[in-house]
Length: 443
Image (cartoon, rainbow, N blue to C red; front, side, top):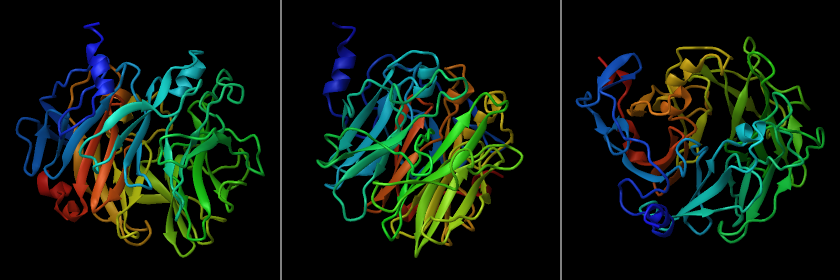
């Protein structure tokens, strides 16, 4: 009983204050590195250059303008947790959800069966304290991630995402263990209870299988746009294709763009493009930002409500083989892109060039006032400062896949730090101009 007491307390007590929260299961050490690399500069974590500060309780070096909290640590650090997503509910709560346990694709490929749960935390005081975790969906299959979506003028919350439903998902097919149906649930009681899943069957490709974990968007006319991609790991290196799922009737019918499989977008020379994030720009215009292995985030634009698109092309945002992290500020017009701002290896071989995961260790941001066509000079936010523990570069250095929303002038950021903890950061919008550029702390 004594051995299980920390786990029971973590499940029963609310999280409070701006300090490391209780967690269940074993922990990983919070051992700081003596030096870390930011861009090409060696930074002494005991004496970082002003205006940076070391936050040992959170395992990061950051600009000194950030409130931080650890909401949750993985129940089993070796298995980890995955994409964290949050939203403001129709009643004003903060709802954060993420899968805790093994990754659905790896578990399916290895025949492990059910290994993870979609966990939820809720805050009723704008992120000061949290209650949880609870199991959001009591399912017999694994989860990928929570894509929160609340249509304009609605009190219904949707949870879109990959649905690896046994019988519809065939993980044992060589190379295709990540491709599954895409679908959604909804809640009409502020995210406490959820409907059964609805599987999306595009009219031009009813058996579409892919993966979706990036945020979606709604256009001014009410059209819904959701990114999805397919992957085939039998190709050496990996092959991926990027698509958009488009619905003009609030999810009743969908079309797969730009074409049915396998006619998705890709970056020439790399045979890959994935994890696209559409975002409405207004007046019929939409931006789609995508992950590539080419050293930059790429962008495509539609001027007709997402029906037709320019072919994706590089943006100025330097970024490794990692997803876009794109959001809007509270004015509803200014875009903010969190990006890694370094890419030392441009290779489509995600498995064979693991060293490129070092480039996921630091977070910067840039803003755009012209729909993503040009971007401000990047400003530094934070970098991981923890010593390797997992003996896995993909785990030890990850700050990627972060999510954000703005509420009451505060940017709320949720990061699956090292795929082991939910790191929650708060930044007042009014302080964005105070974050340092590279030249202001790296000389």
